[in-house]
Every structure is written in C-alpha cells, then in structure tokens.
Image 1: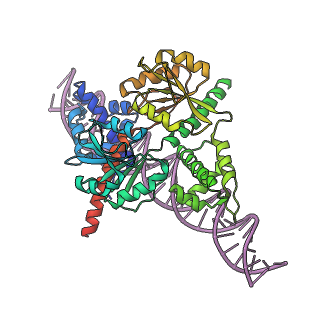
Image 2: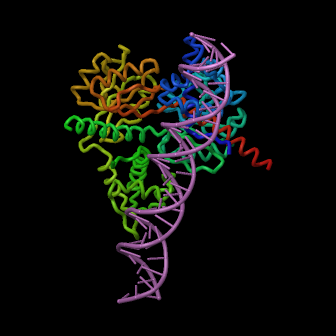
Image 3: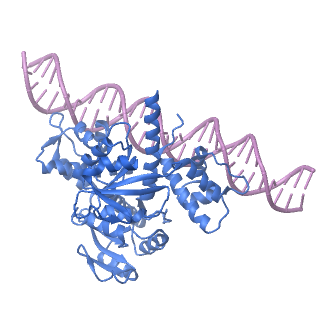
Length: 216
Length: 216
DNA sequence: CAAGCATTGTGAACTGCGTAACGACATTAA
DNA sequence: TTAATGTCGTTACGCAGTTCACAATGCTTG
C-alpha cells in the first residue's frame, strides 16, 4: 500500500500555506527545522511527511521555497482544478463561502444550494444559489465530485444521501452528526461543538494543573 | 497518570449529544453497539471510552440514556458553568456566535471583542461587543478562562499573546496558523482550509479507487 | 429454579503514528 | 586534497490508541 496517512496530508496542506507566505516575503530557501517550528511540528516529521512528495532538498541550502510549494501542489491538487458544491446558506454556510472566496484557484466553491426560496436564484460571492431540488441536474452539469454540508443536523443525512446519489465521492460535513455513507465515499468532519467542548474540558484541566503546580 | 486522551473526550462529547436526542425521543435504554453505530464507532470503543466516566450499564438493559448522559456531563462539564470569550466578529465569528447561541447552558459565549469600531458597543445575540483594547479589563471582570480566536491569520498570534497575558488557559483557534503558546495553555485547532484540502485530496483518491475497481 | 443468552467491563494483542537515530552527501575552510 | 560541518532521506523503535477476546453478570424462559 502506498497510501498516505490523513495526518500527513493535513500537515502537507499546512506546510504549503506556510511556504506561500514565505514566498511572498521573497524567502528563497528553508530548512526542515525552520518549517517545523512554523508548523508546530518537529524537523524529523517534516522530512518524513515530504517523502511521498518526492521533492529533495539540498543538505546545505535546505528546500527551495517555491519549488517545494509547487511540488506539494502537484502532489495534492487535482491537475485541472476541482469544483465544490456547498449545501446550506445559513450563517455557517455564508461564512464558509466568504472564507474561501478567491482563496485557492484550484479548489473553488462553484455552486450553492439551499431550500429557502428567498435565497434561491441570488448569487453570493459570485456563486449562484440553486434550490435543493435541482441538486441532481446542477451537479451533473458542472461535473462536481465533492460537497460541503452546512445544513442543520436533522437534514444532514438526507442531504448526504442525495449528494451521494448524484455521484459525489467526498464530503466535508459541518453538521454535528456522524453520516452513514457507503464505503467508497470519503467524509471529513468539522464538528465545532465537539471542538468547543474538548477545549472547555482541557482548559479546566490546564487550570487545575496550574493550581496544583503552584501549591506544590 | 489518570489523564484521558483527547480522542476519548471528543467522542464523549459526541455520545452525549446523541444521548440528548435519544432522551427527547423518550428512549429509555441503549446498548453499546447501538450507540456505536450512531456515533460511527465500534461497541468496544464506546465501552472503553465510558470507563473513565464511571457509569456502569446493565448486561441486559444496556445503559440508561438519561443517567449516562448526566454522568458524562458530570464528568466533562464544569460544575458551575463556564464563560467563553469570542475574539473577532467577522463572518466566521458571527456564524460561531449564532451556532452556540442558547445551545449549551453550561458553556456560553458571554462577551465578544473586535477592533472594528463600527461593531463595538453593539450586542450580537445578546453578547456585548467590546473593543480589543478592553480585553484585559473585561476578561478579568467576568472571570473568563477560555477564548475563541476568529480573527485573520496575521492577527491571531498577537491576539493569543494578549489573551494568555490576561490569564486565559484554553483557546479554540480558527485562524489557519499554528500558535506559539506557553506549556500551560491548551489550544484546540479548527483549520477549515486544511480540512477542505484533505477532503479534496481523499475525494480524488476515492474517485481513482472507484474507477480502477470498476475496470478490474 | 436452573439453563441459556446477550451484553458489560477489562486485560491482552495489535496497529499505526511520531520520534529518535544513523548513513549519505554537498559545501566550506585549511 | 582532505577534514569538518550541518542537513537530508530512511530505517528502526516505542508508545498511544484501537480492537479482540473472554470472564462476569443479571434478565428471560421453560
């Protein structure tokens, strides 16, 4: 199996973003330990993550910033761009849309859906909003294979079912439920509630540790 | 060390939410494998996660829905509620605020900050918005120990520094950068860009697998 | 009342990820 | 030319997290 771990892919995405900022600052070369410090990782991990990318740095200069960035992009991105559908234009959906507007040219939200008639037909950030009934037609026409779910939890499963039925292979799900999907479909979850409660729990732990440490 | 893993805490949060829905449907009891199916986990993992909670089910009835929910809450939540500050009231910040408005009474966003004068002084979802300059004062007055960062990437580090300086012990960071924080501070990351690119990558992989599977 | 059965709780094996360690190599300086 | 330096690519190890497996438990049923 030459399959890459999810964690590695996540970090590669982060490395690339950091490299992009460095390139803007005209930085030419960077060492693994420098990149690691910026990404919150270790030098060994950076080098290891870069193995599957196939780009080799120089022992004396380190990695060429722009070259490495391009190599990661070549490794991760679709060769000819990827269109994404966004379902749900409530507060969260609109925030997501704003967030990604003109960020990565290779990975763009091109259409949106909602079942609120007052939103259908309008364009948000240049993206036309369709009614959920038109899912099948619009997705087929635009050859879309990935979708973002930003609808309330109680609609998420049925939306996912619809999307998969339309030939979607990957989902980014913001609804706080676990989706039942067939094995060939990939789902990435962003669960804000869970993250919030996790943070709250470990915040309390951190406070406890600080207090006991003080008294000790 | 009786320290609990982050993953377990995350799943406990999810279990509790599922139990809440079940309780609303008047479900009395549930088995580990049922809960596992709903949470997208395995029965063994559910049982293992529940160990530190200290609630025991019955071999014949399973777990009492409401009792288990209460036990998890007792285990995870602060005994007397927890206040959270939100920094940044752009699109994302407002979406987060809406998302949490009146969701968990035990964990509430009580104040917000922004450095845009046009937002300062107004109230969003019942939360007064203060100017970032007032961070120190307001956080001390309200005894806040946790904060959400929803500002652009280039301000995130300085906001974090400020917050930690005000006695914050835990952060939930939405900005797409890795924060440098002292060891006693816990940081939970939600990186939408990374999740999006991860999903895009594995979507492509899923498509490739489907195609090669078909041809094989 | 006893046998049967499905489930719980947990020790033990397993898997996969992150870290450490090490040989290889290009440059620099004497 | 040759030794010294510092980083890269890769293999090996250790640990945390997940799954497996089974004894213990307490309803159900004949």
